[in-house]
Image (cartoon, rainbow, N blue to C red; front, side, top):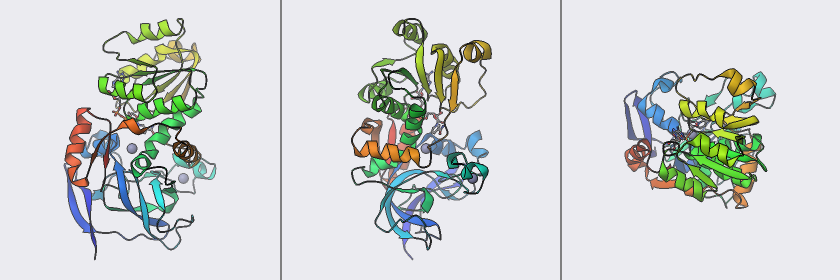
Length: 346
Ligand SMILES: NC(=O)c1ccc[n+]([C@@H]2O[C@H](COP(=O)([O-])OP(=O)(O)OC[C@H]3O[C@@H](n4cnc5c(N)ncnc54)[C@H](O)[C@@H]3O)[C@@H](O)[C@H]2O)c1
Ligand SMILES: [Zn+2]
Ligand SMILES: [Zn+2]
């Protein structure tokens, strides 16, 4: 039997690197030799075992990690979508049932029985990973493994910006973690007139500038409302991408939005948020859209083509790379808020 290294969460308060047998893939699955795997906030929630993680239906032991790319080394009998050994792939993490009303009507990404790769099944912080064939997406040679491992979060941000139809409009991205930074890059690609990025971390604001933000604002250091009103003749911005998940930032966003503007909500506040419905939404005619992941696979096709064409600039979001053995250092860095996207190369 051949063995591999994997980061296994064994109990609510424990995770460790283990040597375990390389898994076999069954029908409808492929086995991927993982080349790059990106650390995400969700992994931190699972490691910390916060209230979301406790209620997410996780069963122990399981292999952490969901954002990845690699090469197919084996396919199940009926992998079903023409994948073959040697294909370079990136992984979609929403695993749909294929049978519910949502799935049958083109909305697999919000399947009624949605399961998440690396949450409800073993993930990719390992040398090898079993992936549902439907979710293994072939990527071009021009897309590096590291960029491939981030296509899942890039897709979420790209979709938010695309559906908000930003061409020729002013866009405010609230929160410049990976999700916000990829939204900045997407808004630049999709022709926003002006991109304003807000965060409380100067390091992340600096990266936002590199990725296409025209104006950066630290709301702790200056009055963001006054700044936005000054820049927009007192009207407010046309589009907001909320990517902070911070309750007070989210509440304030509605004041920064112009009448008739659009707000795409991507961030996930941990507690319920109170809004003034009349002032913030009704009289303003705010258009609100929730964004959960990527359209399968319309978003993937567009992101892939833009990356291949060199028209979506995401590289600066990667600040650190570690081997799997360095996972604790990577997690500490992520928790400290230093750095941004952290990549493991198993
Ligand atoms: N909807 C989806 O499909 C989806 C997918 C991935 C992540 N998310 C959520 O999106 C959010 C962003 O994800 P991420 O991985 O970039 O997280 P992150 O924690 O790395 O980034 C959040 C950023 O917001 C900044 N921030 C905090 N308070 C702020 C304030 N008052 N004003 C401006 N910025 C502020 C932080 O400094 C940080 O840089 C999280 O809430 C995450 O749970 C949603
Ligand atoms: Zn993620
Ligand atoms: Zn379904």
